[in-house]
Length: 492
Image (cartoon, rainbow, N blue to C red; front, side, top):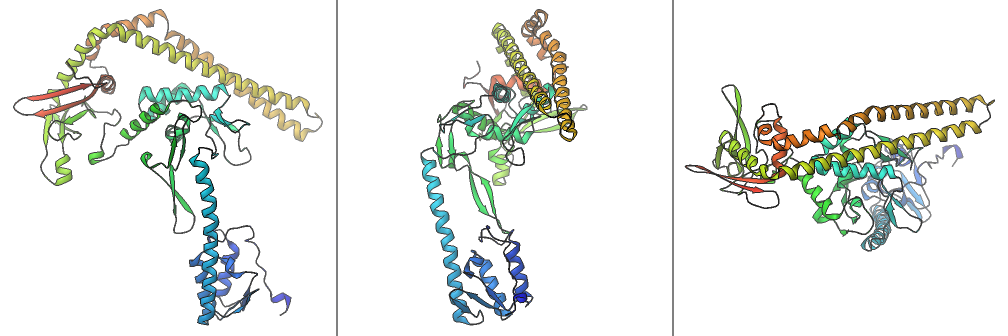
């Protein structure tokens, strides 16, 4: 056979034959065979052309239709012949099984190390591997401060969305470790995004735990594998307190429960959810005293104003029956509000001191984080200056680039310093004697403030959630409300 009639396809070298996706060489071979442009397919071991039965048998079928022979070091095969096609199919199956055995051995070794907590998985930002192989907190103090503030803010606000808004309003950046690209492994600071905060909150590594089996692979029709998140109860290996973390395991589980509560499921899975607009004071805190289900809120117009009604629709939704019960919110909300004011009166001094401590701690934490960011930008500018000073000034192709980088780092440092100097007086004013006196006055005048029409309804709901765990309602001739305070205590 003349050499010019031999077409060599070698662009798939180094690629797995488990799928035809991203294998241009195999796809070209199939196209040439289908167009009857190939007389014989040759290879050292032709079953290695595709370690997937679907791809391999499709190639055999096309070869049989176009009378294309197959040749390897064992002999020549005619796919039109039943015996030859049977032998080729058997060789393809053995090739696929060989790949399965290799993967099974590798998977077994991986699971074996995971069962001992020794499997090395790329750590998230804020955690690093030490030379001895142990996992520890990132020595960068700014990274640690940003992560601790994120967890504290989420626990205080109870919502990932409001946590992101807090960071954006305060101008605080959040760290991220680049996983690919020319700057792989470097630390980048950027405004946080909702998906990024959720990713950190759901990661058990920040709780000092080693976890294996959080996702499960599922083959895609077009090739490849998609990862499906597994419920926490189905994680394969969970080893709390295996390495240092930013929160403990109990706080991590509490965060997962709060995120699940905010997830807005339906039916029996519906939970309290975050506070929202609307005049219903007990939104997300009302239970049906008859069936125990979570009651929803419906609004109607009365004298031009929206009036809430708490409705239990669990029976109607699940069994097609009638509405379990409905309770007018204009009767229940004022009664619960009056109870809350009564509970807060003896707690005035304790609440005042707690608020002052919270304000001072939050201001100190943000001031420390901003000072650390100033130090980082100053260090980056100094490194850029050193690189510029070491370059040959006559080599303008390099010197101009380094000079521009130095100027950019200096501009960034100046912007950070100016932002800090602008915010410092505002935060200092929040801690002065006059502000502390206003906090005490607010606590002492809580009944008047609670009744003030200018107070946003979401703030009232937020205050109520700090004290009330749930309210069970029963509608008979008179409405009975069973209020359970946070911590499991019934209201007096």
